[in-house]
Length: 278
Image (tube, rainbow, N blue to C red):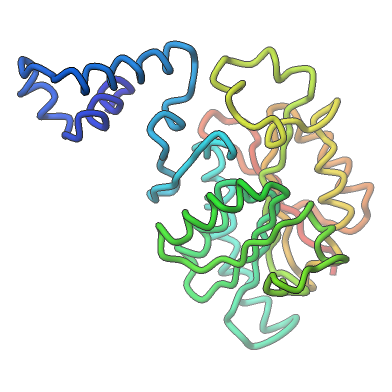
């Protein structure tokens, strides 16, 4: 469905075909008011996902609101790459660490929970921890976990800082992970205001990656080794043109071997996969 069909079918609680078959059906005053209100919001630039209060990601439905970043199709590549690597990790875990088939995954900056929840949904037996600095985002993520009938351990914290200051009322996270995944803020601070109007509705904390868009990559790359098992992987979504800079950060850390850069549907490098040096 196109955007107009999506909006009207949701407002009128009908399907796409009925929109056209019943096109001459008059609308009552309350319905007209709702249509008008929604159209005004969209004309101002508010994303359709916030207007509808939901979106689709990895074939699953997620609740979204202004407190969380809207899941993008590009981020599905990060999830798909993690799923692909999981089979490799299951084999290596028996060599490096344990015979157990349970995989431990950490999602840093989980937002709506779309990455963590998708991994929990499509990887049976996986144990997923997910951290975010925003309590409001975590509440939405918890609702999304219930919506999709999966179990994820959601933790309030600032990236890896939680591990040095855990709180008693939160289930303790896993000490070491097979996979650490993250879609961190990566837009340079000065560029955010220049982006399309829809972006301005999203939480700046989920977008702003500092002056060069690299602030979070330094933190992730230098802190991750202490939380990865031998042979574990770090998977990072990256912005346009950032591949070289992030590879340099990985190389300078002397802790990772760069395995691959995965391109998105437009041929842009979107995910970097690095493995902890054995």
